[in-house]
Amino acid sequence: MIVARALCQDRPEDLDLAFSRLGLPRAAREYLLEKMPHSQVLLTGLTRTEGRFLRGLADAPAAPGREEFPAYVPGDVERRPGTALLCGRRDQLERVRQEAARETELLELADALQRLLSAPERRVLRASKPRPRRARPRQAARSAPRDRARTRCSGSGAQVCGAGPA
Image (cartoon, rainbow, N blue to C red):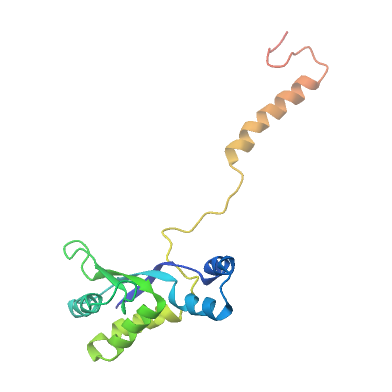
């Protein structure tokens, strides 16, 4: 089974601030939001047929900045066969999906890309779940003896702070 995971996706909200600072009209903003965001997609479970297909698309000649398909980086065939990285804009990934959907032997790749492209854009693969920030238990433990020492020293006993019995 082929799995397509988004490693990184530029969020349109992040670009909107830059576009407004540039003073771009609404039509230009919408056009650029469609074209500019880049994605890095990790593909796993690829066969040689799908790998050759992706390499062929990536090797298609085009003028710089006008590439029809995303960049293709295959995994190490010895250590990680069947893996690849696609880097490009959303419309480029959609074109790969459309091309793959035309051939029956590439339908699984087309389905994997369809699942990725139809998922919410905020769903991005993370290495680990971020832990919520909490007060460290050590800090609380360190401050407790000081509080006890202050309490012990504040009394009217014969004991001087930190000096022990008099």
